[in-house]
Figure 1 (cartoon, helix red, strand yellow):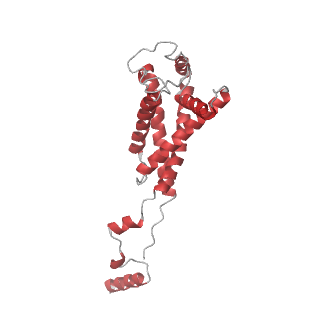
Figure 2 (cartoon, rainbow, N blue to C red):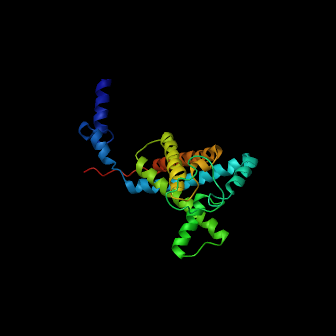
Length: 232
């Protein structure tokens, strides 16, 4: 009697739509078809993640300076030494520029790019320190946002915290952009012109950036689930 009642109750619930029938169960292929990839969504979420990662990178640098002010002052003094056009730079791979150089003494790569863009767009040399700082920030945030968008396109289908992907992504941006592209395009000295501590500092910042991008994007992806396709 109990088994009969259970079967009867299940049948009624299925008839009313509370339980799926066997013919309505979605196959794995149908489940995948119900959630088509949306590259535009992934790109936007990745860009937002890029903003968050860039902010996290800034916090990382602030914390490093607060924890080790003396070492940071020594590093800044070293960065302010004349570039290779006024003083020789020792070490292997000190200059790997295929173009330029376009950087000046005391500049980082984002400052050099901002000043170069200003020169290309206006035909005049940049004189204002305030404008130089503003352009540097624009280059920095624009690059971080655009790289986050690329991460979104490449890893948008991941679920959960993509920690390994974030670490690999941050390391790739550090290696390809900071270590190779910037110096190769003439916007920064070569890797051999910087001490190991400088490379470690930059790598750590990009690891924080990558994890920030991944964590932010995956959090937003959970809060904003994909809209399933309507089944006919």
